[in-house]
Length: 200
Image (cartoon, rainbow, N blue to C red; front, side, top):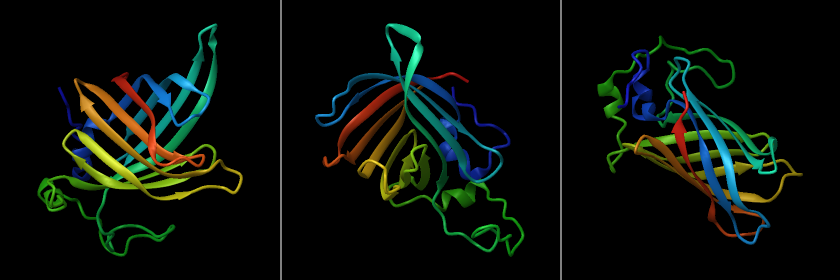
């Protein structure tokens, strides 16, 4: 049963099913890359009272011969939020304070953000530990999220990585996700997927 925290801002209610720490395993298989196999994944979605979710994730491959040995794959940090136009009540850009009193949005206000498909437009900003940054745009509709990169920024020394899509869904109290990428000279294609259970 899904419980919505009482202190959750109205903007986050459509995303509330993501809240918590999720752990599990998945599979990697991309192009003719040398590795195809299973990995372990841990994802955390939290909030601190703002109109966004904090996101962190890490993944690794366990060594079957040595349970204490892991090969780290990725670490990501980011923010997930419903798309809306910034107003004078919002801080920024940079450290600029709001020019108007804060607005406390109600459920009715959030309903006005529904798109023509019946979902909510979504913005996701992620940064990887290797310096790659991604801006995803997409939508959340009930217990399903579909997002695609609008921009990928990477350092000069990073491996080629051009675009991605991600899908998340809540199925039988598990967080299922799939990540397609266009990287290393390959077209956009299946890359990784996982099934995660609530750990916290």
